[in-house]
Image (cartoon, rainbow, N blue to C red; front, side, top):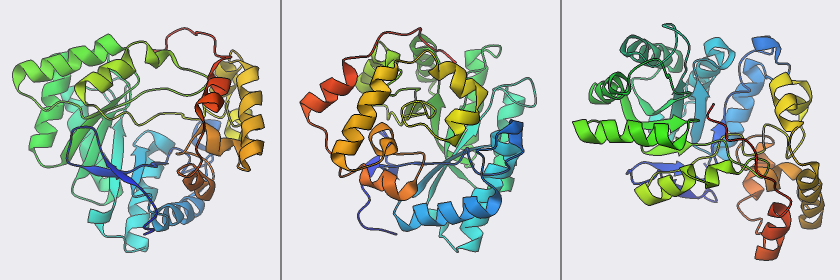
Length: 302
C-alpha cells in the first residue's frame, strides 16, 4: 500500500482508518434498481485493487447495494488479490425494511451473518446502521447491536442518516444500559447540504464521534457524474440545490488544476484524483467563496 495515505482514529475508538474511504455502492450489477452507473464485478475489483494500492484501506459497503453483490465483490477482492484481512477495514451497512431488513433483533443478527458470508470473513470492523428503523424500540436496537459486538462478529458500531435527537437518544439508551455505543456518524453533508451544522456536527464534536461524510459530492450535484444524470432521486434532489455553488466549485477546480470531484469530495469518483484532495488546500477566502451562496434547506432525517 502507498505510504502517502493519512490514517486517523475513528472517533474516540482505537481503530485507525484511511482518511479517504472507498465507497462501494457503485460495485455490483448495473441492473440493480435500474442504475446504469453501477459497475460490474470485474471493474469493481480493479478499482478496489487500485484503492488498496493507494493506501485506501477502508471500504464502505452494504448488503442492500446490488442486493449483496457489492459485499461479494469486496470479499472477492480480498481473496483474489491476497489482501491480508488485518490490512483492510470493511464497514458494512445494515438496512431498514420490514423483517428482511430493519433493525429488529431478528434482522440485525441475520444481516451480520449474511454480510460475513458474502465478505468471506469472520468479523466486520464497523457495522453501520444504514437508516434508522423507527418502528423498532431503541432498546431492542441497541441491545441487539451490543450483542453482535459481544459475539465477536462486529468490532465497532457506526450510524448514518437520522435526526440528531434520534441519534442522541440511541446513544443515551446504550449508555444507560452499559451497552456498546456508536463511535461514528455518517451524515449527509456537503457544499449543497449543510444543515447538519445545526445539531448533528456539534453533537459529534462534543462527544468525540467520528464523522465520515455520506455523499460528499451531493450525490453528483457538486461534481456532475453519470449517476447524477441517470439517478432519478439524485436528479430530483439536486434540482433544488443552488447552481451558483456548483459554478464556484468548477471555477476553483480550474484554478487549482484539479477536477470538480476533488474539491467536492474525497471518497467517491476517480480514485487517483480523490487522493489529490489530501494535497489541495483552500484558503479561508476560498472557503468563504464556496460557502457564501448557500441557502438553508429543509432538514433531511432520511
